[in-house]
Amino acid sequence: MHERAGAAARPEDLIDLDALLEAYAEIDPDPSVDAQRVVFGTSGHRGSALNGSFNEAHIAAISAAIAEYRAAQGITGPLFIGADTHALSAPAERTAIEVLLAAGVRVLAAAGEGDAAFVPTPALSHAILRHNRGRDADDPGRADGIVVTPSHNPPSDGGFKYNPPHGGPAGGDATGWIADRANALLESGAVIARADDAAVRSVERFDFLNAYVDTLGEAIDLDAIRAARVPLAVHPLGGASVAYWAAIRDRLGIELTVLGPGVDPRWGFMHLDWDGKIRMDPSSAHVMSTVDAHRGPFAIIAGNDADADRHGIVTADGLMNPNHYLAVAIDYLLAHRPDWSPAAGIGKTLVSSGIIDRVVASHGRELLEVPVGFKWFVPGLADGSVVFGGEESAGASFLCRDGSAWSTDKDGILLALLAAEIQAVTGQSPSERYRELTDRFGDPAYARVDAAATPEQKARLGALAPDDVDDTELAGDPITAILTEAPGNGAPIGGLKVQTEHAWFAARPSGTEDVMKIYAESFRGPEHLAEVQAAAQALVGRVLAD
Image (cartoon, rainbow, N blue to C red; front, side, top):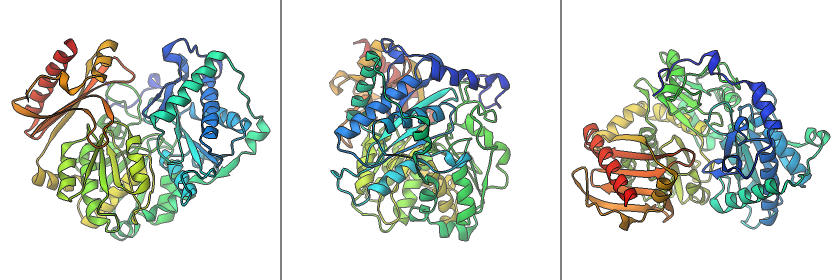
């Protein structure tokens, strides 16, 4: 924990914008260096221009690869593109537009000006779905999209994510092909065609903001929020949702206060995260101390990250653990969405809290437990077989009230408005609702720790099989399941999950650091959780040593 975690940023914490933008244009990445190659993680390609991992050459190559990929898939409809408020997002968006136009792709960029020119991830997903509604899977007129965002990452970072016609994050087959092709272009030194300034200035425009805000009533009970006059505040944390929240306040008649100074690409108003970095993570208590001074008059304060795909919910009890809010949201929605198919299931990542399992079972619903990554929920959210998908890292989305698809990517705006709906309809805050759930299902203690791991250990952890574990008990309880594949879809989890009747742990390697992430939970309290964590580290250590 950094000594200044939770403290306000100082001038020396802020990035040099000129140096960052200069590096984007001038540093030529070396694809023979692993750290400078195109790599798509669970949320696209990310990096910083300063270290040669997110530069103009990367974006040109990725954009050219996406143009080739969509052509091979028979996609000839428009490609929606939007960017968040990170400093690298605007130049990367322009690079992409230049390459895509030169490749003959019909590009639709944001129509707004100023803050309205930024595009949240859920607004782009929503636009793709609305364009493709009623089109067959092989219809060449289907649309896809690109979101230029590193999500909640620090101000020096950039990110680039492709969303196919299903509207959500691309799967491994697509991202693997795109990354391989982009790296091949970098290695060959190919000259990638670019459109000129006149073509970029005349690119087609799409009003993402109006298309999203004007249809929110299809997913949220706005009448209930208006009638109850829930005192709601939202801090966009300087991200792409700034203009969206202002429009929601002004058009929808909600008692809403938009906090913060607006957009600042250096994020000088933020409070530092656990490691002393500026990071726009609304699920972090250190980051959300940014809103502490405003807590008095509001029943709920919500926060979003830079591309508004994450949510943070603050009540009179403080910032809610994301797992707790997911459980509350699922319990409420299953009781207040009568038009949802009773056969549809609930999706969660396998490192999310076990209280979600108990809530879902109490409603007689099927639980779809998948590996880490929102992409696993996309098919179900698209066809209605999954009504809610959520991650422990504060990302979630759910269907419209009539059971149709709203967004197949994470939607922090939607989950923030849902908190106000819950308060309006039940008369209880989400944290009060969570305490009722713990009275019924138990009060789990949950934590995640990072442990050092060599690249060899990480590779071994990712390749484990259940037979590699000889242990029969964990922290005094018999082991009931050892998983290396997700029970919801059989996909590899890239690690290990061990369960007992009262507890579980999961260990998986980090994709960016020499650490393994160990998640653990116990329904027997914090002391037993500590025992589970110690037993988990010992068990994993033995397995890796073998």
